[in-house]
View (cartoon, rainbow, N blue to C red):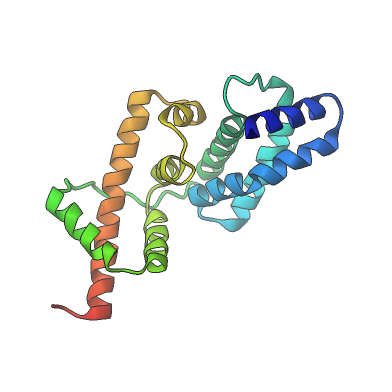
Length: 194
């Protein structure tokens, strides 16, 4: 249903009804802002990227052929705008070696998280996500939060399927290690050692 609505408004804009673009902005401004914020970790940068994304989308709307969903096409523009901003600012301060994660470590982190209230879990996970490098954070965000399929992520990032799978795998492992290192000290500090 949304795809048909999107196409209706896209057609209106292309035919000269510039006010129809407001519908598309309203529908997708949250998605683009969230993507940009998760990648840049800056509210101001995310607002600027969001505006730039919609300006670029408006200017290139006639180039949208409908081969993919409009949201995927728009997401790709926002993703690349975010990458450009990151490159411009050169803020990559999250590099460390990924250690092999065993099943028992994964299970212990899952058990610890089960004991934490849902709100606390969301806050901890959000805090952990911000510790990931921007490209890995965006992969996790696209796949789990925006629920993009692998095919859509490939369209957005313009990476190969193998590369996307590798990046997702590495991002999951790194996130798990960050969660493990963040959660256990917080639990120990809050509840004390057993």
